[in-house]
Image (cartoon, rainbow, N blue to C red):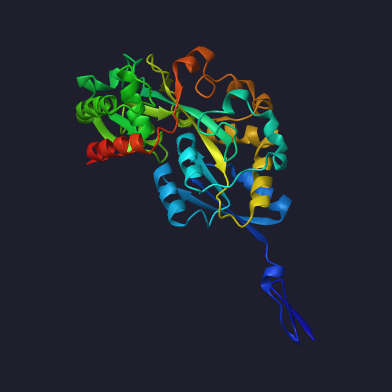
Length: 343
């Protein structure tokens, strides 16, 4: 006699393993609201798998968790560029087989071969963006154009900073005329001292939906990621995103596959799937951030394709600088001063 129960075959001679019938699971670790739900649902249906989507708040907490688990527990992990070299060096990342991700060939050339992973052995671009200035033109009718404007005394308790160490120090380094990737202790200390003087203007730090405090009127001006800037503008058109004249902090988030993955082939299928033009366009439509390929942008409506908040001009891009790994010694200096600043 045979009985079927929830996909398991029960025979008179014994109980067969449920794993023979269970769906394979892809464990994804990313920021919240970071992947288009429609794309995830389509991949689950196409591959007959389940996606287990777990979230983190920032790169530091992601790295700490992955380090603690020794690269196990997840199959696709998203990480900003400046964490890639560190994670690869510590054996936390598997090499990505480019032959299994043919859709990557359409990646914008400027996003490949960057210092954090020159051969893209361990990472492939997901989205890229800009940390710039943001303000409500009703509350700040005079407008702002420079990082240094945030220090003006009339903005006491009105400023929001992104809750990201490298973004905040990058802003202060740029304002002081240095590279956002400085490894010089004196320059990092000078940035810290500048940020201490900014404290009287800072109401809060936020990296979880950072456009919301501007929409609610809790803050008037401050830092913003351009994609969240675009999202905020859809609800409150008075919100304005500005490329600071000193140059913006630029960043790129990446697909990675942890070294302890149990589903590497499925992870590579997922990355390849997300590189399909329709999914690249869906990323921009959903997040307001620039995706990695040319074909994806071509599918967007003109109002989004030509939006300067999402896709800044080449001149503005030239003024900016990508955040890169600064090495363990310099990173320890940043962390030392970040803790002092936040405490």
